[in-house]
Image 1 (cartoon, rainbow, N blue to C red):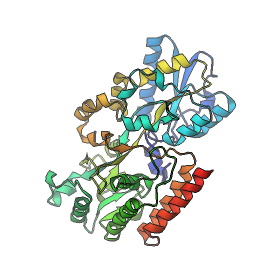
Image 2: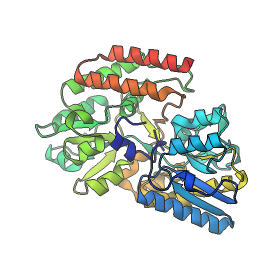
Image 3: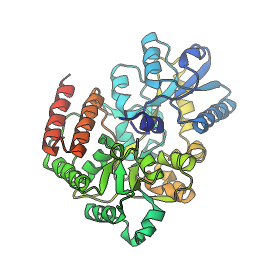
Image 4: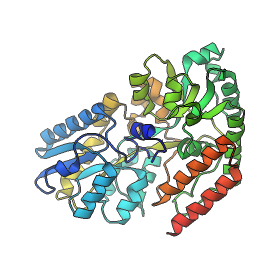
Length: 409
């Protein structure tokens, strides 16, 4: 899946949905490219993901008669950049949506999507994210969409039932007010462009147009969205996680500082490992004035244009994205399958996480090169809104101007 983060902790949590840092050996220690062994470089969320990828590589090797080695990156983006520049990139690797166009435009990626017989089985939002100049460059490996995550014990203590699960913004504000006590806030989430972007989608807006060629930040729809958030932040029934001494939404929920948060499927592992005492469930995000909407995060399987055996690399990716392997990954480390045909299976196997698989109303992250710094500046503006030192209209005007400048470059 899905995607730079403003805090180090959240970046670590989201490493499987963004091109982020992992753990393990560096790529510089791998066999030289072209020696007959395919190399797979990936950002790992931990031992479970690393073990699952290594096991999958061995299964493919046994089936194909070829060799493959899965290597967790120390810094995926840096190591890929060094490999591309030196002409010795890994054969197969994770690619985040924020780097796809840069790599594709630079000639580093092999566009193999037309060799996938069942590409239509991948969720449309994911296919769109990894398509550049009408070519599907790489197969989506998994996904995770934003959902509303609820502390069910706090929910019950407030006298709420399943009938109170919010389906609109008004209802979300109402239950957040009901859940807010002197000890915890009703809803807290990471105060950056990712959850705010999900609200924008529900409000009928977004950062850019459909093909990421025009900035659409400063619009009435986005202004209404930020004003809705500001009103509830000012009322202290919503909070950005940082303002309540939590590094991200999962920590706010897990430590009891919030009764609800907005996160993707990556919260599952964190709750199981760090906050096993918390009872929780995830539900679909409520609809806004513009209808339903959520942001979907993912990575895809990139293949290097400079790979010495593209045919074998494509075969490896087909294996890794097969239904059987995606089921194994889901079971091993919580990766939500990228195939629509596995949606029902995933919901039955992992009912508490089913809402994270809601890609029908989803939109992929902004993929325009150079836009990451624009969104980082927007995050600063959001912090100002929460602190009362910035107004939504000015923050959106700045975002529009900065975005247009980035596109012009």
